[in-house]
Length: 165
Image 1: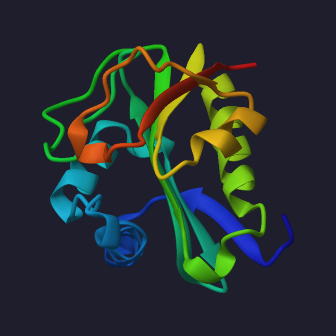
Image 2: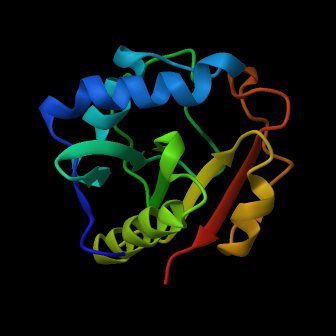
């Protein structure tokens, strides 16, 4: 990644930008969960939530939190508290529309994988929406079609995971 972008930990002042990016990415598909649900997930593990900054402006983010393997948050329900788990669940990864297709999602995923290794997680999981499971296979993720994903993720949602390391 060039010096044009900075990945840093999510800060309190980033929430307006994060909520706007999330709304732009998901509202048309009915997948937007809103500020309080997003914040509830970040509160569970603030040290594993990041933003992608370009020239001082948040242009992407990645929220992840420890979550039991083969389970995922329901978009319609805020988190009630943190889980002790060796599985790091990438709950959400969003880039501003003009940055999509520039391999920056892969850069954010590499960043979270490196942090997962440092923090001793055994695997990383996520729910692929809107057909993104095809791309995630290239990053080493395996689909677990036997896992029932909450309806709030839409019809084509697939739970996926990959080992860390």
